[in-house]
Length: 68
Image (cartoon, rainbow, N blue to C red; front, side, top):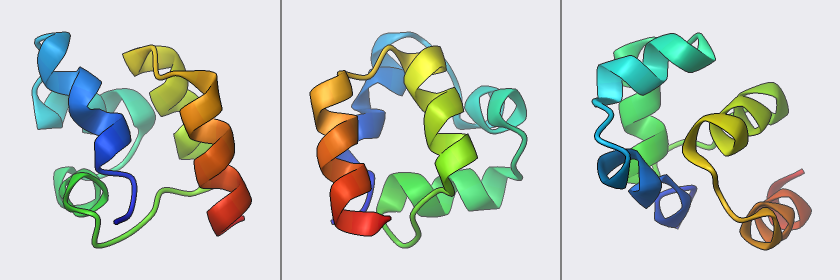
C-alpha cells in the first residue's frame, strides 16, 4: 500500500507533484513512486511531507511503525 493514502492532501492543498517533490528535495519521479505506493520515502522526507501537507500524526506514526 505504501504511502499513497497519506498523500491525498497534496491535491486538496492545490499542490502539483513537482511542487511537493521540490519542497521535500526529491526528483519528480521519486515523488511519483511514493504517491503510487511503489516506494516509501525515507524518514527525513516523511517529516517534510508531514509539515508540508498537514498529514495526521496518527497516520504517520502507524506508517513509521510498519516501515521503520
